[in-house]
Image (cartoon, rainbow, N blue to C red; front, top):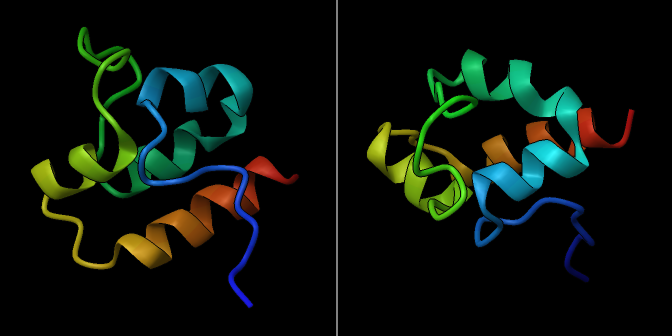
Length: 70
């Protein structure tokens, strides 16, 4: 059975940050400095991860969801 995630790869960076501001540190830990990016309303977490060469998107999503649930 697949995990139910609060944050998914197709969610925009801006929406994720608005709903779960506690994820900001996770994004910066992954060198995804998207917090103040002017395209964060349009760019998804998945696209941003690919742009910033995140190798393990599933681990990123796990880490984001852990932070979001705290």
